[in-house]
Length: 72
Image (cartoon, rainbow, N blue to C red):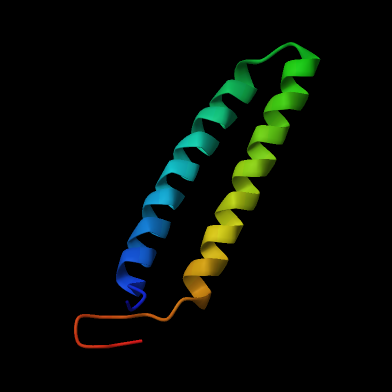
């Protein structure tokens, strides 16, 4: 069974979209918080989302680009 790079790239793209949603809502929430403990917690969520975004970007960069007529 061969590894499907197109499916993997598609999955990474979908994951990146979900990370962007988490990051956007966390940043909106951060602007409305007044409690310091909650502000610190949302900073952790944002940091985790940013780190996850970097990981998916690295995976996308390192993965072979496979088009309709190319094979890995």
